[in-house]
Length: 203
Image 1 (tube, rainbow, N blue to C red):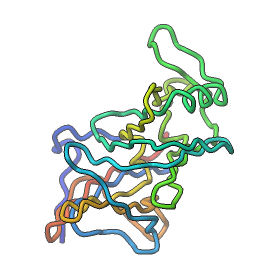
Image 2 (image 1 turned 60 degrees about the vertical axis):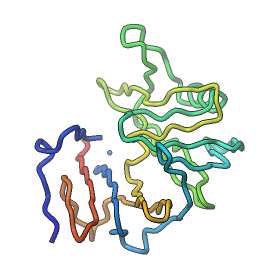
Image 3 (image 1 turned 90 degrees about the horizontal axis):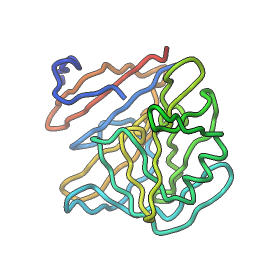
């Protein structure tokens, strides 16, 4: 049986909508097979990186050889400028001069979907925004001149990944908290498989 550490005892552990879960598994997979989405090969020279042939947003498909990078140290998603401009317009984003950040109206329902290994992996609106006050949410998305995707903490919300270091591959699966599944926030180890789980109740 794995042992969980309280979040306040986990160094550098930061909580990342009803319920929002963030789960990363390293080692043999620890998810229900029915939640499996896709498996791809990846490069692990420095970061885990892989190709994303297309991004979908608001019925539009942006096709390019996007260079995707996984990172858990940035609480942001970085997308190519064409998509970024479209996203700002669709969400009615306004620049907050004091915080130098874009803010949008909360409660919208526009997912950013990445085409990965033939599957559509969503980054949900509630993951790439964060409520600041009232019905105002700050946007945790930035633009880039390059055809790249930097997939920070918002990407891991309700998207589970299993990093296979032996085969340089990544399994993607749905880690949304289902009725029959109970998760506890913390880090566990079970037979060499490490799992980090963050469970949040939306206020």
